[in-house]
Image (tube, rainbow, N blue to C red; front, side):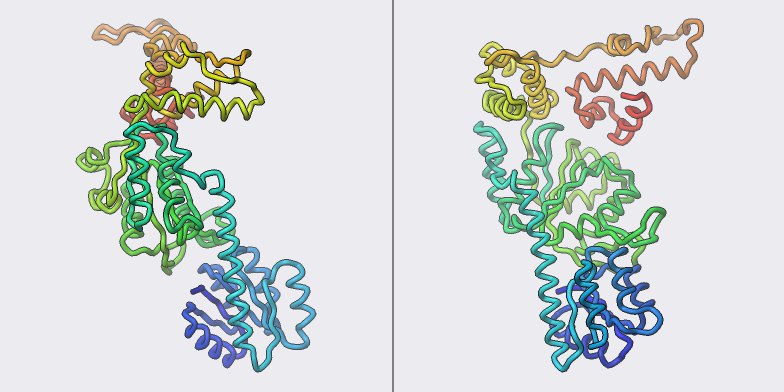
Length: 464
């Protein structure tokens, strides 16, 4: 089923195509003037646009150019009379038009075939894109490194839930590999050949996140120069992964809840709904039960998301997997760097197994990558991450200067104003939290008890 716009100045042609294409299950709109077609294209998203070439005022070639500019993903089929034939051929050769059909007694049948070709081409393009992007994760369960009981249980859970269409909520600390688990669920599911679309909800301000997820129409806001499909529509028939779902504002939570309930999205600036068939997988490193209690996360959305919960264990709970992970990252990074490093030094491996790894697998990978870059022998020697320094030491190392103790008789040094003093404290706290979290920003925000968005703002403010 496709969204189709028909433009022809002959009413009989419009009515005939409207009736015939609706019988095929398509959604059809018709207009009888080029300007009306341009207005429709500005206000909605169409899979296929069918337009006559020869029309008064604004002809079909102008409609084609407008569609190519505003809605480049739409297929355009030109209806041509005999004297329009050369113009149609040139339009196809130029790459703007998908097909052209001469007006004849068999017009309807030829248009049906052309629509099928256009829809199949769009589907094939989408499928090829998904296959190319997911090629590296085709064996996603193999990419989840670990043979500990906790990881075997996780893999079995993935196999079990992948065959369903239910919404999944993945819980786990930062750096545990929640996106790998989400990809594994997708690749093991019947949707494996369709798109897997990942979006970090904490990386966008509210207004931008809405347009990214739901799409927008030309003119919906400053800078919206053409129609854009939202990520939910891009993921249609596939899977969308909403990482850091807890960072979504309450207003956006309401909009997401409606999408999950109605299975439709409304692009920004549009008055019409678009039906979607998408599996939703969300992830969080926060305690959503607590967030619900604190009224910063909607209870109804939580229950909509938490249909099938999956917990990804932290690295400290599966230390027996550390040798496997360390050797996996050694091989990966040594190959990329063109180094001939055969093994991890036994003493270094013992040290790795005894460390707490607050940044989990991501921190381990970064540590091994750094060691590979510095190694000069065929055996990898790994230095553990520096333990969390005190906030005062971190501030001094960053050049923030000595900060006076906070007390009832606080006296600022000469020349040190309150703003400078507070800025030094904030900067030192940021650095200390980053050190404690192994450089994982979302976890550092948790350490400080602030949102990831606020943490990013402060990082930018102090140039960290």
